[in-house]
Amino acid sequence: MPEPNDDRRAIPQQRGVLPISRAVLMSEQAKLWTKRYRTEVAASSSSLLSTLVAYPLDSVKSRMQAYKFQSFMDCVQHTYKTEGVHGFWRGVWSPLASITLVRTVSFSIYQKSKYTYDDWIHRATGSSPLVIANTKGALPTLSTVTCFGAAGATAGAIITAIACPFELTKLSAQISVLIAERTKSTSSADDSLRRSYNNLGTFRTAQNLVRHRGFKGLYSGFHLHMLRDTIGTGIYFITYESAKQLLANARGNSPTTPVAVVVAGGLCGLVSWACIYPIDSAKSIYQRNCLTSHKDRTKKPKIQFFNPRMYRGLSVSMSRSCVVNAIFFSAFEFAKKRINRLEVDENLLRTAST
Image 1 (cartoon, rainbow, N blue to C red):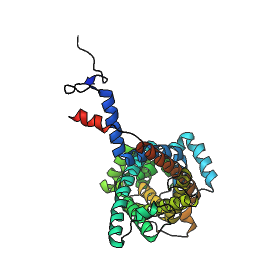
Image 2 (image 1 turned 90 degrees about the vertical axis):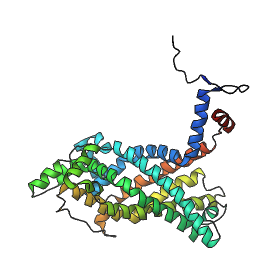
Image 3 (image 1 turned 135 degrees about the horizontal axis):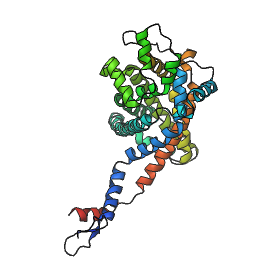
Image 4 (image 1 turned 135 degrees about the vertical axis):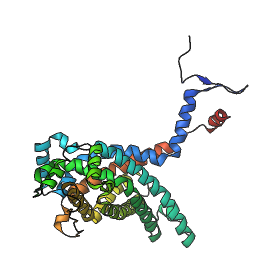
């Protein structure tokens, strides 16, 4: 009778060498892989947690940007009355996957870009921004701000190509009920169009966009999205890295102390959203228009800084961002520290490979 598969069976070794358990070998290989991709592992796990916790606030923010409500509580009460508790989580599965992917890739690009810009600045000036940022007692300088800002802007610009279709389908899910309820149109074709998006999942929404607007429809609002993320992500990382450095120095600790990370994480979301919110509002309004009118009749809103209309939902967005980033960066730094402390038996791996 054949023996069942057992991952705990020993792997045959050369004569005179003790056999290695398959389970032990797989454990060491997993540790090595985790350490090699620690940024991606930490970013993905932290993103899942922070996105799930703060999604209802993001849903309310999108509704307030796209349609007029008297207040935050008015939007919350209307959503609960018309859609129930489920309404606050409508479309959550797509962001859980997409935001996790986007954050993971974004942080990977940011880390690589940060070291690239650091090398360029070091060659040009003779000083390393990353060394300055990690020196106890050192303050942020023009070189550190430039390095972090350029790396963040690079990550934001590149990641837009992945994020735009996901964010558009997420917006459609969040406001589909409001589109059917509130949008007034004199055109029967537009009326039929906006109703076609009601209560669709991510994949069917994407299919609808392609059918009505072609493949480019998935990238409706791409120019606004890219502008928002390029500027916003640059400001985001400048604020995070600089605030973390200043707060840690004020306490005489290293830049990755828990208090510094939590405060800097919350602060970077507040500052970046305050700076780019009118761009985000213009993007949301334009994408809503794409879902409610024929492509030849879609109105393009202007980006209007200091116009109260463009700041609807700002307080909700800033609160959400503060919560999301405080949770995200706390979990991110904690996970990286735990991964860095993993001990890998490299002798065992070398022995197994031979």
